Length: 399
Image 1 (cartoon, rainbow, N blue to C red):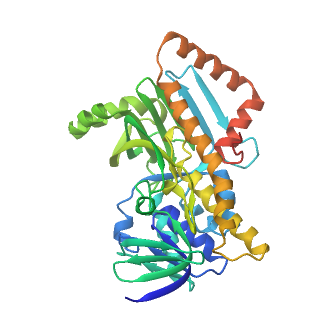
Image 2 (image 1 turned 90 degrees about the vertical axis):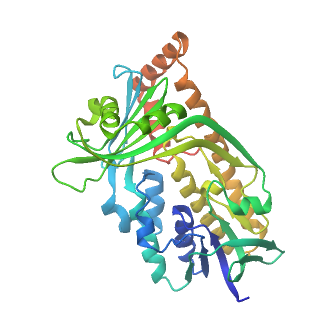
Image 3 (image 1 turned 90 degrees about the horizontal axis):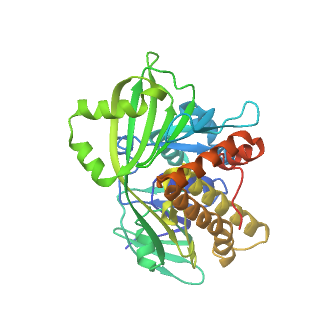
């Protein structure tokens, strides 16, 4: 079987895998990306209609690596976030305290992936291998040997970016802690009459949160938003079975106060909700990033930004090792990356889980405690700005 040598092999060509390859390629490393799917096909990219919330912190990293200028034209800024508990009288408003800065940006996954693939195809030190199935991994002190259906790849480092059900994690038997929710998330892209004015909404009820995220419109006659609606799994199973008119009416009732009349529902898809975190983000010369390392409840909208932070941390660990004269396969890089990423991810995993429980609780005491908390945050500028900075990815959690 044909053997190829690389500095890094990236397993998984989702957003995190492609961005990892893009970021590391800037350092002149020779990189291979493998994925069982045909990730180079634009037709396949078009199936992912979901949007991604990019925090201001992630945008700053994208600026650093020269990526933001390539995707900024596809993004819609978030100027304000309005958080509403039960009814519109109990709300908090967040905005960036810095002039001419935003809380974040909403962009379709399609544009991120298309831009990354297009750029990587032109990068001489990056090699793309779609339709390539990983079958085994062997590690030694100096390299990783990855066997696939048609080649053997020898590398100094393996980046596992192959999602929540990571095959790399299963091969290596890395322990993982999992939390399953009895809720699903229904993701809907739609056109509507009322101008969203770049405002995002997070609306909490006893059934689960509903987020409305402003999207860049593809038409001058209407506006576009993405809705992420969490609710009981059985409720959604029944709702999906209803005809389109009934579905639209039910959704209209949920969103009309914020974005007006729905003109057209473009896409909708149901996802089961769960969270997990690996016991460690590395094994020998192997690191886990993004969903292969962790996934959190979407209540805070920080899922992919946590993965972006992983990539930034990996880049920082490599740069520090390079300055010390260490080899790419040195344990220092994996251990340093784990040190930079694990604690913050674990705390966010816990916080989002607890926040979900707090907002689902529906009794006199919990409702009044939340109301008092909302009032305090809304009136205290210092607390409000701190939470805004966290949402922007500028503040990291510390124990």
